[in-house]
Image 1 (cartoon, rainbow, N blue to C red):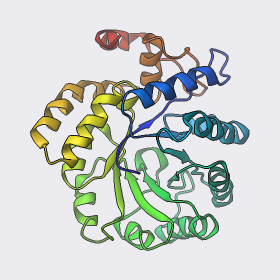
Image 2 (image 1 turned 90 degrees about the vertical axis):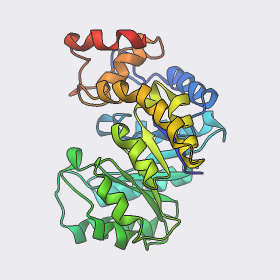
Image 3 (image 1 turned 180 degrees about the horizontal axis):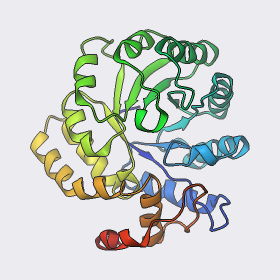
Length: 285
């Protein structure tokens, strides 16, 4: 269920910042019709830091209901407060999410045992498949290899989304955890190499724009057709890069708007893409 290309879907908004659920439904249809293997809702790309609790749970509910079992739904439920993360993870379970994606607690800068205890408490209190999310460039909180190994032994923790871009981590951890433990890339630029080193899939920003290609690349690698997969990845290299010329999801929301798929809304403190970058996206519109 959790292999292949999962789109880190944006949260469509109107210009006033309110959520555009009709466009969310259209995006879900787009991904169901274009081979995405699953949807991650209210993650980093979904602007989770500026989404209220009520909006957060409603976005999960709307996505699950509208997807209607066509593809799996993973709900972002992380927080820098353990109790808030438990609340959001329980809500995701009650709403019927297939799994929860739980980012490392940010800003607090906890020690490794604090990170372990944070995840262990969520594991102990909520029975839903849980995926660790390590993105230290955003959180200032790095889940060390040793902590991943400890956490992998817990009942409900089934894998990790690694957005470090450090391939030495998967190479080391693959030999230290159970074969069933999942490795999902959270860094599009290195996702091909991550997958050929034993990764199970990708939670992708690029898949917002090129879902069919990302899914096909993953499938080819799992079929050991590396040269064909590499050709697809080479066609995506530029997109992997330019979608991060400013903080995600600023560029991807700009491009989706130019493609006619969403309105221009984005919430402060994020703002619309700087005009100096417009030209590099022209070929994709």
